[in-house]
Length: 133
Image (cartoon, rainbow, N blue to C red; front, side):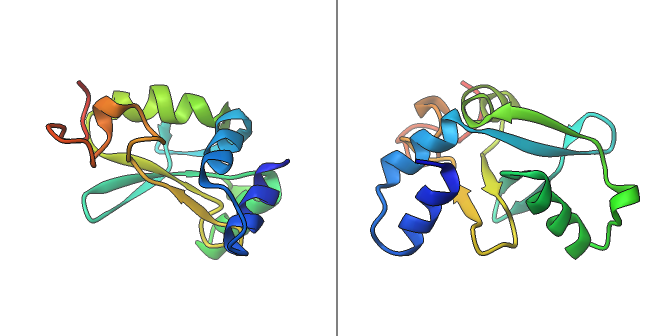
């Protein structure tokens, strides 16, 4: 099943959260860059949210909503979700998650909790601060 299908199933109350995370981990996503080589992100309530998109259309809609024309779109990189969750987030040194398809009906958050990110950086694990171990 595709990532967007899993998100739809979750939204309909029939999905399996573990299947959703597994599909995200296997799926290549687009991550826009900001300020050179920095991944575009935003902070809310002490958590850094990395923006990722399932396809070019979702990325273009997000940028347009932010007032960024297609001609001025920032560069982006492609990575499978597992690389974001297992490598990038632990390297940040502070709590971080992924905001997939932000601002769309098929948007989904992958927060920094056990079962999604490595236990050492999960904010819900006793004795951790959400940063790098």
